[in-house]
Length: 184
Ligand code: ZN
Image 1 (cartoon, helix red, strand yellow):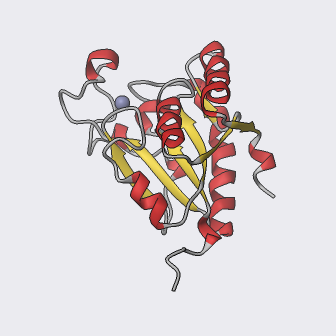
Image 2 (cartoon, rainbow, N blue to C red):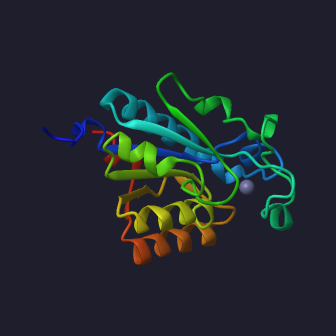
Image 3 (cartoon, rainbow, N blue to C red):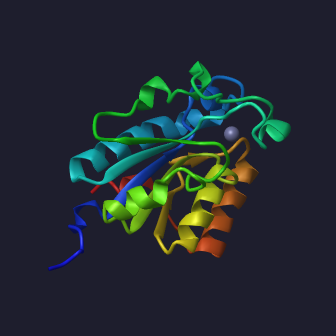
């Protein structure tokens, strides 16, 4: 008897904070527009391949620590906390709410990934140097292989984005690629 799961889901695509407030609202970022079609292509490919797609979405409550730094954004249940219409989750995708930067922090993400036999994370969304970075840190500590498509993540500025990618490579051994190389 084996407890090993099938390896069909060995990869997962994580989509971080591609929410109304993060693209069009309270923390609007015009730079995020370039990554929308890239992420759309990637999640569609993932669904076809049987990789799981997990949305890790800010869903803040009043008084959350980040409110002091960023002001209110993506409040749980609000329009600002909804995934943008271009990237709406589909049947079979997983949607987790988070109250701080990391997609792992008190969200049940690790259990979900382990339960699905996932060993490699393809991490997308915003922002390269904040939530993507914190999620990568926790993925690294849990020994997941980390892949970050540079055209599937974005920050508020070019320097934050580029320095963010460099940090992921240096500290977490993240494999920095283009989304096109993952859609094969
Ligand atoms: Zn937040």
